[in-house]
Image 1 (tube, rainbow, N blue to C red):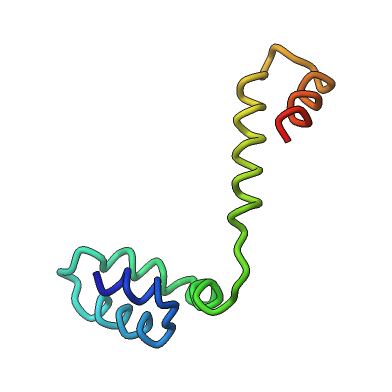
Image 2 (cartoon, one colour):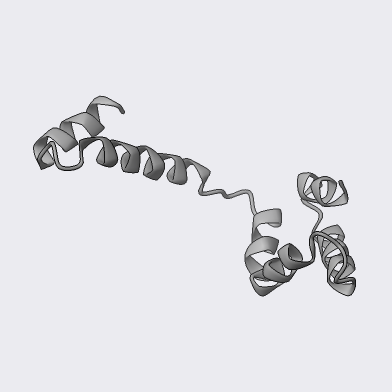
Length: 88
């Protein structure tokens, strides 16, 4: 609950406090998650402070991968290109 509140508020100091709390006790369920987040702390700080997101790009890539899987082995590049452009 505290994690969700901190992330939604984009509170870096609150997040670091939560992270220290999770790492201080190995019995908590989020210890390993916090341990992994600590290894990439700069990216987490950037995600909390900067207004930029790559969510739109990730969505387009997932859409493209789905189309590729559907046409794999059945269509050439021209059909794949037309299908991608048709769905834009």
